[in-house]
Amino acid sequence: MKNALLAAGLILCGLLAALCIWSSESSQIRQREQWTALHHAMEQTMESLAGGAGGIDSDEKLAAEFMEKFLLYIDSDSTVDVTVHTADVREGLLDVEVTETFRYPNGRQGQVTARKTMIIEEKN
Image (cartoon, rainbow, N blue to C red; front, side, top):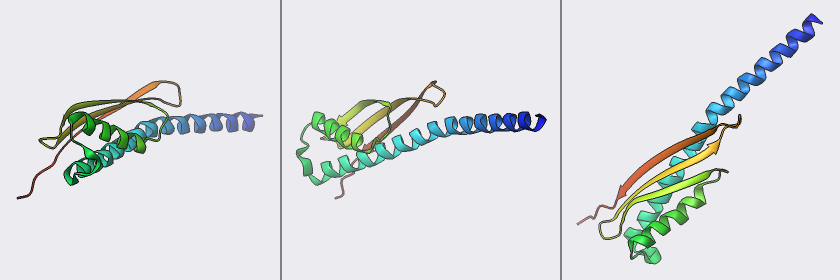
């Protein structure tokens, strides 16, 4: 009986430790996914702008092109809020902030935010 209680206690401690590790990793995984998606989407959007592909001729089209590419990279079941601070086709500037809201395994709500600015430099 004593050994059974000890085994049950150890299993419970192991499960709690696994839940703690899973919760802490959840935030880091979301942050990594968000940063990767933000980087690749901005890079592809700015390459399209620099190359003249995609017919990006207005600031609104630049922001829409970014949103389209960004959403292709997000794979998680969370709420994503994208704020385009600056989209300027003439200057080749794109400044975006992404906030992702998600739930931890214990039900608590978490949030990660990333902001990135990219400028096209012209070569003479």
